Length: 282
Length: 262
Image 1: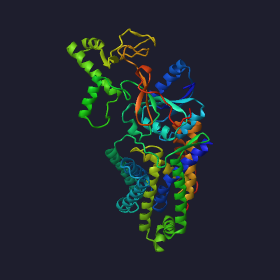
Image 2: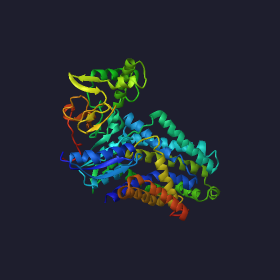
Image 3: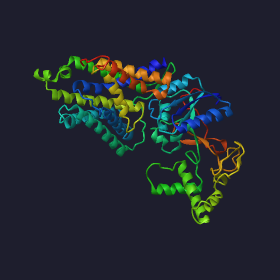
């Protein structure tokens, strides 16, 4: 029962983390290796605004989300667009950007870990498992955001335009959609989702300058194992990864926590390179 | 406390392995406590929820934590998760005055074995003068020298005194002069801290072992040498800290965190 509860909670957080990465990969067709930096920046912005300056938590969370959005927009305008679809150059430059942002965080905040207090305080014991209201809130927020995103993509004009660009950029352009605007919107949305996830992730674990790496690996795993982006696929694979990690710790050994995720990536790449869900529409 | 069994949570480092071995093979049997299991975790672990669940499932009465790397993370998660079992052990972050700040205030209830001097103590005049000079010169972390800072300060003074006596840092006369060094620090008229060294063939009575050139320690009550090898300190939920063991040096009482049913 403990495994089920912790698996569900952790998977919800992972789904939230991976969603923004999946969006970029689906619409822009690039691996944004600086995606983890949204989480990093989101966590530190929240820490500064709410924990250091004492501003209410909701405002801290919104500020982090806005800064993440702004970072996404700037990244697209200043880095991705000028590279004109050169995927290798984009991947290398985004990776370098993440390292530069990590150095900036070390310069500003030092390299030691900081503890972020829960956004939602409180804890309860369920069948021997400690369930913090913070992680429960992250899971609920994750589900709410994913459902809202699904409805947005399926039901709105912009969402359908995102789908069209993700399927065929030229075809979308011919039908009157501006792929540049859709890409810009998607990068901004991805940044906002990443930064929001970063606040929950950091408050669950810790704030540290290297905290962008683990979420990036989770996101890459979800995209590779799930197949090129679908919201449902992201949700399912986030649960596979989350439960694998909890099971590894509880049943096998805590040191092997991330190993099975790595092995799963390799196995899927070898046996089913298109991912478990293949190429899906958003 | 009525604690009869323990589960060890140990970081995967040489230090963690050594301390866990000491607890399993020496301390626990000596205290009549059963070690039901040892959980080894990677030092990059940032989610301790499944590990604490495993500890709870073991049925042990308390957790003995051995953590030197980033131990503010495991400490704060113990508090944030309100793990319903006591935890003590060796927790290096908790030995610094910055522990409360580093855990964001989520450090109440954490206790740790501690070399002296450390947090929770009133300092003797000599050590306090060192702290005052240090703080006048530096305003960065650590705000108060860690225990090894005190050891290094007094040790350097001894090394220089021995060099003056020996006419320099040569292997023969300096070593002999250093062996005789013996700084005794009093606090409120009582022997408090002593920086001296075990002789080459001197046997420590309780362990029956020799510790040539090691700093002297005294693990036998009433600690008349004024050199307790270790004490236990605890951070309380209001952010204060105290020595809780041994009784002679205690400035507070050990208490389990408020969320644990007594």
